Image (cartoon, rainbow, N blue to C red; front, side, top):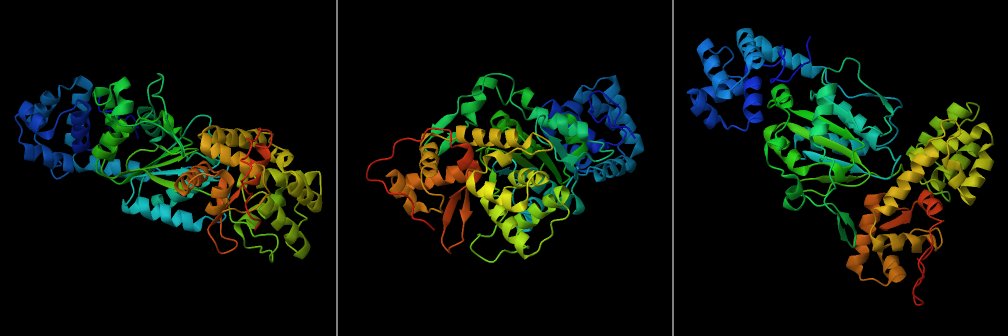
Length: 482
């Protein structure tokens, strides 16, 4: 089966006649009325062809439409061939789309069932068409996207998956994916040109990247270069589908082109995983926190997601360690001490090849920073450090100042009243700062005491310890200990 899907340059054996006409029409920027005028074919006939209601048009109809579209010899031949095949073209396209599956994850899913259910339902129903999953590096954004995409694929949606170069894949590409190149083409279409980006607009709560007319003006968006890839339009048509951009840098994505793509493909949904949000209209921001970990002062539970995850990694290094009463207490303390952060837990588990569990627990409770280097791959530590650095560097002065002040206080939960006392800022400013830290992944919600509180991640506290903290006002009090 051929996978050359461009109606401009190749014979598309799997594209239906209507999809080809629509792809060519949109590629050159014509409306159905304009094509009707140019080809002398009625608007209704063109509409029926594009919707698949007319599957075997007459030869002279195809010739007139090809003339109106100004098709070259190869594209004209492909259009005529699709017309001769009739209904089989649509069937071929359907079979092609059915094979578009997400990559295969390398590890089983632990926890996250509630998050997957929400994401899958919002995307399946079309209630949300653009969702950006954000969180600290290594928190599990790709694994969540893989599970969500798998559920949607099981529900009948083809999945176009693109992992941005340089991102940690943590998955195996699906064998025989016929549209892998098309997903890459679509991702390239959504990237900004390699020119200086529009300067970000600094706000008290963080950095907002410009969109719309502010960002579009320097690049001339809205011209022909903003046309969606014709091959994507030809293949998907009105079909429901999911496009995943894994590890994207939202500051380098073109919102004008995405808007056009979503208009031209009414069934398309887009799921993005990124360190920071896109901050564009219509974006549904999904904050991903680390796995739930039990407090060390309670009864340890082997069912807690962070404990289960850590045990799954411990078995690789020390299969002799079982979940008995003694080891469960130590594992629970390690899981809590590393805030349930999956990458940090995996790195810490690798240290059990050179130390015992109680020693590991002692290091975590004293200074977890050395444990962030995975002993076998050597990349987890730099990966996590770089992620924390990016998260802190992306903050504006207010939230960054708050992180420094929290690092200078006791390791305890805090709430909005504590932030007001700690910074001396008005409540609305404090709320915006806390939100910026949640989006950046530096803090996580905590409901351990039945109140709305937050906790600065210990990996952030450990890695930010080398940064000098600003002097606090004399009258400022530290957060109350939990």
